[in-house]
Length: 555
Image (cartoon, rainbow, N blue to C red; front, side, top):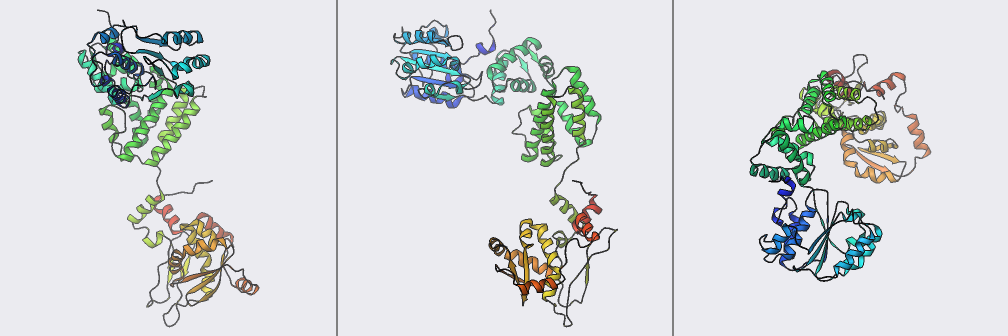
């Protein structure tokens, strides 16, 4: 017997046999059952997903003598003649080779004639977007008002090239790429019927190579069977298709964790010797880390298109990488992909890039560092938020010493009390601590801190600090933050203070009073400026340097 390729031998003969296009086949079956048949259809979508096959099944169902629930029976004379290509009522036209206006004029003339045997005359025009503009214009009137016995079915892989005047006269159906699991299931069914043994990894390789096109998958399947025979192994499939082994990508991710730099040169040599494409290698590596990202975020492997064996391998990495690390790696690889296209020595570029990738250090967040410090008791809850602990009423005058680097003197902050043990809360103390108060706000709320830097304290009445705002638009923002400022003021000034804001400008007497107060300025001396720039008087920065080995990054 003459060999028939799998794509033709296993071509669907009913709507129910079409793979992955249920949204279209269900609509067409219901239209046939309810006798709501349009005069023109356009099927759009990528190659090899069933557009022409669906058009043929529709044509057969329209002329079937004994249709069953919208499906052709495949047993009547009309169905058999159609399967044997002996019917004259279904005309298939290749739009690429019959694109001129002369062919369309001939088609317009033939449309007038009634079908020979069947109920309808169906014209299937494949790759209709290849027709010329003149051909489309010649077809417009016929397409809009064809004879009752004529139905047009257009198929195209590029519907955007079809004029909107044509599309608007048709019922449009958009076919979608077939999912990997559906392609694998179909190939598994075919191999079982053909007595061919094939493992899951081989099915995955073929399905991924097909990129959503079942016809491509079936063509690759025929090649694989010719190479491997009746017993197909994944190693032989990779060899035949010259595919990059996915194990290499896992070696790279392991090398990043273990910092084994020699892997970069071993893999580069392997790619060169086996003749693999460097761009394909990078594309696979990007996909590998994308898979790792889904595992790290979701803690499962449901969104990974690979064999079950590799899915279990990906799950082993769910706690080994952080989201930030993988995002940095993906950004780096995207840059390498761009640079590789312009390099004259791709092997050297891959070696250097893989070495850089393996050398990337793990990143962490400030929150994580603070949590580590808290666990090790290096910082208390109050010191992480840089607040001063309130002094109890029965305590005497104390000095609160902040941590500092060994090369600087300890910075002392005083909590003032009078002879009766009550807090000596006067306006001069507000002025002395005002800059420190703004600095602490800046650490937590930079925007609010920048606004407060233009606010001036003018007086103290009881526990109410009177402030004047230079810019009237800032007053509403400050009033919304009153509760935060009250808590921060209590922590810094040691009293349960309140703030009142005035939008009036400072009077000359108030300016004179403020100028006479010794308000500390930032960076009055070189040593103070050095402390501010290096953060030597900040307990958080000191703890990060001394306990976790942090270091300053130059800009």
